[in-house]
Image (cartoon, rainbow, N blue to C red; front, side, top):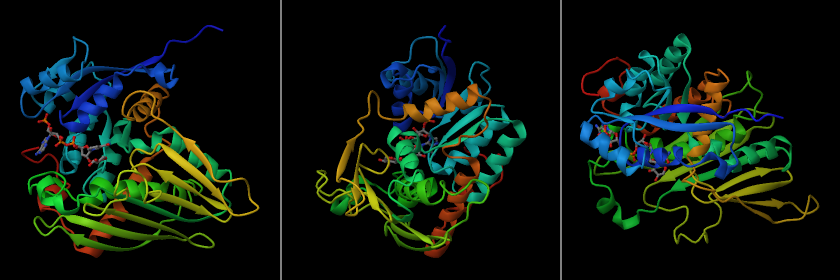
Length: 383
Ligand SMILES: NC(=O)C1=CN([C@@H]2O[C@H](COP(=O)(O)OP(=O)(O)OC[C@H]3O[C@@H](n4cnc5c(N)ncnc54)[C@H](OP(=O)(O)O)[C@@H]3O)[C@@H](O)[C@H]2O)C=CC1
Ligand SMILES: O=C1OC[C@@H](O)[C@H](O)[C@H]1O
């Protein structure tokens, strides 16, 4: 049988910070190293809001082959006809404005997490993508890891019985050095950039809860959880430094999701895994324990109740080449190839629901961002 040519996607990179570099380098990893033969990626342009020089330096540092264009503004990037899809890698505060800019210019978008600052903004982005028939996806890369895909399928097949509860923690252990690590202007704690644990890290804990307790509900009749939560604020800036959430999903019987996130405590204090798994997915016959930070899991363990199978079973899932952001890029490429506007792994409705849940957590904890970045007005000066 004749082999068909891989479908090649031409990426434009909007912003040149830390994750933009990691993602761009991952795009350039040969897909065959992860056994992907049907899609490929090229980087044709990058833009910096700071300067064209910065965009040039970015392309060089990422080893992007010559021929890619460096732009000194995001407006120039979105006007480039050679770009198929734009990766938005700015701080949370800027996702709404930057993604809207891309969509209004007719570009498909992969936008970093958290999708937006609030659900109202997320809904408007989805409406715009739908209206213009453009692909739009929130870049929750973890959902596209083979380990996540495998575990969703395993739970769906009933391997651990009927789902009961999911625990998920992502707490990065800054401990007593928090003030040294995060100066007030740092995007991790800066309210002007929608910083704080919830939108930056809590989204992953919520992702683990939602992958199983929400995503696996029958599409079209998924039911929202009730939310009970607590927030502790970082005294220096007022951003959230510790947020704990209990979700109750109205199935029969109801299931519970416990999602926690924090800047000072740690899910893995000694970085050797002695604290146990950061994630536990529990059913009536056993549980799945997931190790590694919630955003980049590399190992799981199956533990059955007596009489339900041999255990523990340890499964390692090393990341073949790159950091792990390649799989979400492959998903974008396949959606574009197949004419899909949204990804099954994380559809528009689920991204919006998760933003609604985070709105509610913020409401309960009295966490408000500056009006300017909560705004749905578009365009706003200065983005
Ligand atoms: N998936 C993952 O694993 C990760 C995802 N992220 C997400 O990626 C996004 C960016 O994070 P990260 O790369 O760490 O952030 P950085 O601060 O390293 O980079 C952000 C970039 O955004 C651009 N930018 C535009 N306006 C501003 C502004 N007012 N202040 C600061 N930067 C601005 C800048 O690029 P320029 O000057 O070129 O325009 C800057 O370099 C966030 O949404 C974060 O949640 C972050 C880390 C890991
Ligand atoms: O998405 C992320 O994952 C890794 C973290 O270190 C980072 O702060 C966050 O933005």
